[in-house]
Length: 516
Image (cartoon, rainbow, N blue to C red):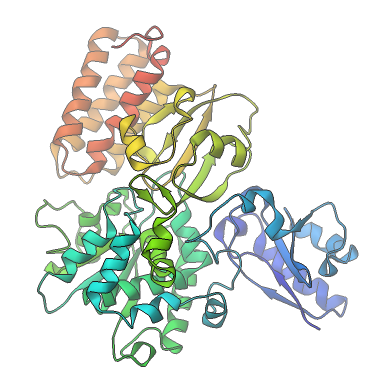
């Protein structure tokens, strides 16, 4: 009888030796005359346990980790293919507390299936959403997505159903679905994990989006620094074509949807939807003036749905289980779940999918295990390099778009980066300006010039030169960028800068509670 062993192909696991672990498992099994099949799955998201190897047993999948290539022979000595005792034995994967405490909807298959196998995808409820969508009118598909309360998971949190409805009702001879997979925020990797661990859910979501708005062509605009995702996506797309889930006659319905991957330009600003469209058209990635919105005049001037990976990958479960099912998760106007990415100074970095309403404190300590250094966590940046820095007094804020707005913060793409008490917040504020200066497309003056001047002013503040005058100047400069920038890159750079000054004034030469 063949024993199935799972070894991740996720790039985080690969960076920790997963390829060699897989090779060693195959070589050791052959040497011992054991019938073992190695399946390359996605990561479960517990990166401190990678490479995490799972073996299928009659009781379920048993996990071992973190497994280094040198550990493989000792695993076989311990009869790990029969769940033998070993220091790296983690027990049944499904019983690992860190996983049990989550609500995995979008990530339901990640780490469980072979990412590129259509057969495996179907065996785990894949394409149920598409099959349901094929029975509905375009307007009914849009209504289901609207009823779910799904909002854009890329950061803007715009209601997905409203965007789709606009494209549906826009008259045109050609429409497009564009997936923004240019994941560039620091501390974020949920898009990558979907594309490497369950790419077919993204393919299915984009196909449903095409049916919903009358688009027959889709593009995945993939971050150029994701070579492993590129390979996995292209393999999964090719398999979907072979199985009849893409192409001119989807599932024999007579409906058409074609899909291809395009490499991104390597610029952070191309994560902004109009800059992305310019780049996709073969032009320099600079921000367009709005209006017109991409939903009216998008790719090649045609109505275009531009959604983030997680938004589109969530659509299949909405169409499978229904909008009401998804809407039952979450709080307030933040419905469903959010894949949260823990990074920075925490013991247990990884992906946590939870319904909206979980607090930062729960995430940092119950899931993250506290700081890796053992020192108190002093600050957390949520929402990427343009997100606010939050102090410990705000760690009990529930993850909810509106609750974060109330404290002048953003949830963004769900990335959380923790810093212990050794962090210098003045240097972090300087970095925000520097990041903006490097990544600015240069089209608008507040972003192009303001960010460069911001670095200069922050250097003077750090050096203690004309302190009062420069503190006033940095606030004035931030106000100009906030209100005068063409897109969120310049418009949100003041968030990390001003939150650092307001919450950590002592790092800027101010007394605690003093406002510059």
